[in-house]
Amino acid sequence: MPRLPTIGPITLLASVGAALAGPAAALDPSGAPRPGGTGPAALQEPTAFRARTLTASDRLAVGTGCVSSDGAYATDGTLSWQPSCLGVFAAPGQDIAVYPTRGTPRGPDGKAMADSTTTLLVQARGDGAVAKGANGIFVNFETVGGPESKARLDTTNATGQLISVRQRPGPNGEKPPSTWGHNIDFHIAPGSGGVQSWGVEYDMNNFNQDCAPSSTCLSAAMFFNGISGHPNTAWLYSGGGSTNTYAGTVTVAKNTVTWVSGQKFVPAIYRIKLGETLYRAHFVSPTQLAGDVAIPDAPGPVAYAAQNAMVHNGIYFQGENNVSDTDLLTATSAYNAINVAGHHHVGLNTSADSTRFALLASTGQGLCLDTFDGCLSHAGGGLQYAQNGTVALRVEPGRTTTRGVINSPLSTPASSSAPCMAGDWAHDAAFVYTCVATNTWKRAALSSW
Image (cartoon, rainbow, N blue to C red):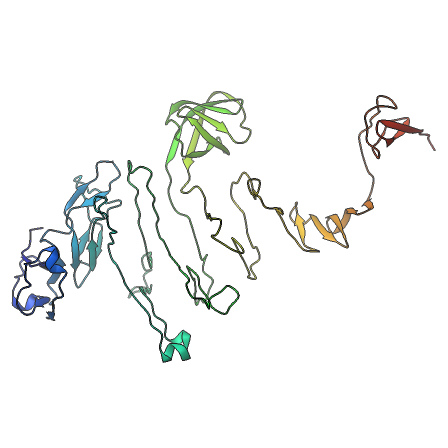
């Protein structure tokens, strides 16, 4: 694409063969040129512009006359594009070629291929050599109260940024393309070091003294709302991300997996597949993994496959003063409050927490261990275990009741002074033994009937 002439900081982009002439100008600076030319200092001064009509062939860019697709591939092998043409580009249709910084594909000729187009492109760069914040687009928005908002709070909504998207069939009923209302594609390049990287940050700062948790005020960093004829799949859905895969052969001995051939291990591997079975394992070295669970020995080389996960923690809350009441609150009529399905090692792990109560349930609520056929609950002042609705064991202060026979292995104390605590008992084929005091046993003979 040829270089195009620049008018001050404004570049007009025209289709091939179109002339850059009078009426084609989208923005026409009125009045005399600003003192000092078009340098950064001069750009700080306000300038009035007279709007003029755009024709179908007109294109507008604010920049230095370069092309939106100028740039080069990064040298880290990730197909990441590093644009060299920085500025703002606009066109009436989806005519502006975009080379995404993350994942620009190569064409058959090995050159970068633009498979994305847009009507508006902001191409900018944040520079770590400059001690200031950098933003690709900055929306500075303020809302002020008035008589309408005072009278009808919910009818005078104000939005800093609103994206309204409608997905609909084509003229002949064709299925529309996959559509995202908002998509952030974030790439952390190799060699960046110990950086902090946030896909999205919401800073919700509540300085409203009238907005306490117990008041009628609502404040939340994120709110999901929908009007649906049919339920959506989920409010938050994480999935579809492809991870790196590893394959080769290994041997296994005493829960240690040793690399033999193929791809060596990397610290990101968290599970390994041998045959059709998945095992949790962690990285020890490029040639060794340690099983988190028992992995059967395999003295001869066997095929392995492994992957790394997309994230380390699905949802992560940290900070002593982050949440005051409940980390996760569900107050709905859903069938399951939390449904765990997949390939986990532990369903619920509170072992590293200082919580006093790992599970808190009220009277009559059950902890079921075999679907709904074997449940523990607290009822009538005691703890009880029921199978298929029938109470099999009940424990309460002063009494333990069981339905059926109590079974314990036959055992004989070594002597009448063998170690014991008052209340211990044992039995064998001839006697029943009871510990009546510390290290003091008495017995009674058994007989047939």
